[in-house]
Length: 258
Image (cartoon, rainbow, N blue to C red; front, side, top):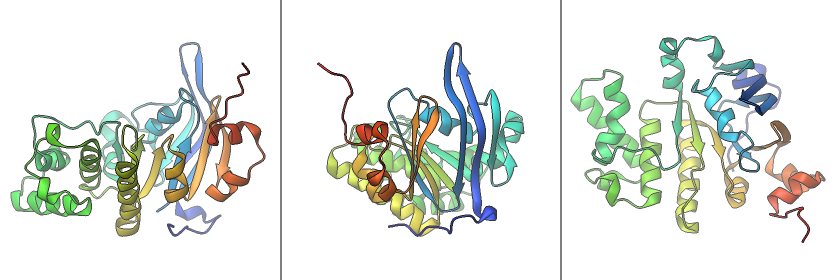
């Protein structure tokens, strides 16, 4: 299991949400979320579909602005920044979307190199070196000349992870990284996430419905329910909670009676 920073070390907080609220029309998605994430910590975010898990995560990278509340990344006030000022945040924090959002007309190595080229890195030898390093970290170097359409779902997601770490991101946000994968493919992704944490000290937020994964990779688990944090604690505390709503969710029990 990952090493855990000590509780209560304020200067080790990497991401902080304070009273974050978000509404889309009449739907109140987030109702005042408070959360602190430490450097090198792996947080899994669970909860029923449509409860704002991905919405909360997108606030961290500035893709969504809160109606109320504050978001801080590495001490920077994210929602106080204009779009053109977001570059330092997005160098620190990368996001792996569902399906990895790869360009099908580019090869694996071209997809992975894309963030460097977008940032203006023109030294071809440097780009090539960092692409190979990133692909080796996710065991895909031998597939670098392939196009995404010839890859399995798990390999596409590993390509997305390589693209996320190539810019030496300190944090990766994963949106359902195990969705659509068989158990072996899912375990490979879990191992990749653990490897990124161990090798690079990467901080991770993972939105997932895969209960097996959270007990393998999470330092802490947050459950969003009706726009609020219903639970926040370790996987062991999650197993032992006497909150019926949480227990029903993690054990796949519906409260609907026939």
